[in-house]
Length: 468
Ligand SMILES: Cc1cc2nc3c(=O)[nH]c(=O)nc-3n(C[C@H](O)[C@H](O)[C@H](O)COP(=O)(O)OP(=O)(O)OC[C@H]3O[C@@H](n4cnc5c(N)ncnc54)[C@H](O)[C@@H]3O)c2cc1C
Image 1 (tube, rainbow, N blue to C red):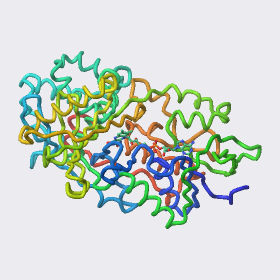
Image 2: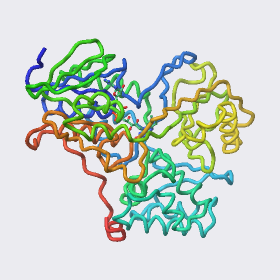
Image 3: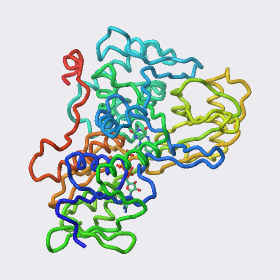
């Protein structure tokens, strides 16, 4: 069966595929999307907890205010009201004290966070000053960044082990999903510049107030269908090959083939390499994608018999637990007297290597030390969900392998957080890639087609100091 001219098939219904679909639909183009799973949203999804009857995210996701394209995607699909912005980040130090990171009124970027940083009592004054000097130096570096890991560079800058563990790791691990010794200096700089130095608001965090499965698995597909898009779930595309006529034949999981002139492949890197293997002779780069490494992220789901804290989030410093979230599910009355919390651990290699009961006991102990006022609380049940290839590993030199969304084959584009967006594996990168893939399929630049949204404006002082 040949698709009517103009229909674009999108393969994969994660944020990248959804963003491509939104961009095309808004430009008035017919779209058909195939997703292998029964639910859309990809890595940003949830499961039904049978005990409480609640949808729980496999892993809490957050955006930062600097994620302007993700925010744009949410605005266009009517999701913006489902996020709560945290403008103060609560850090808990190994000294048992709480330190709030907030922008000081009246101080322009990049100085706005300096007073909060100077108060971090779990670092010596020398460590604090030395870290601030190193951040400034990093921001002023404009070349040679992708040749070494941030860990190596930080040791060259004589950052102490305590500074690595208590200052650099808490920021970079969660933002990059990779350890200091594996992550490229280039991406570390991006986190500090885009997330903390360029704009006063950039560091603020947007936390979803509804399960991801509801946002991306129900509301966005409903938005697409209302606008005429065909969204097929539970149907995998096994392979894609080029026909003699220059169109593409998609081999579907149900044995059916489908032909289309324009295809966007919005799959994770290994899947994309597998599905596009038949075109690899014409596009040899496809074979390289398998060499990209993944990095694990774990969500540790904990149900206690009493409240641990009223704070919606906490950053734990120098511990196995990294971020704590208190997602608002039902009340304890509706959830059987249980109080639910989630600990997120990025680049969770250490957790992976541990015996699980020991790891859970350690995490619970860390939480009890951070929140002693919770008293004698008991863990009723727990579940650890680890995604082994949660994000691609932002190793030095990776940019050579990250492909452009525009393929050398006419009518074929690719999307996915791992494609060349300049961003680490994030919702922002996925949305950017989807917008760029939709644009790449246009023969000529189309003013009606969704372009990338601008970054937050860079403060004048930041431009002057760092040459941004
Ligand atoms: C545990 C965890 C925590 C994270 N935390 C954050 C966070 O806090 N903030 C943040 O910004 N990012 C976070 N991320 C990263 C973010 O989830 C990803 O960057 C983003 O969701 C990737 O979207 P994608 O569309 O590129 O890929 P995916 O979400 O992987 O989408 C690909 C889709 O393709 C489908 N598919 C696969 N094979 C086929 C096939 N053959 N045919 C059809 N469909 C197929 C898959 O089922 C999937 O739905 C986290 C990721 C994980 C795993």
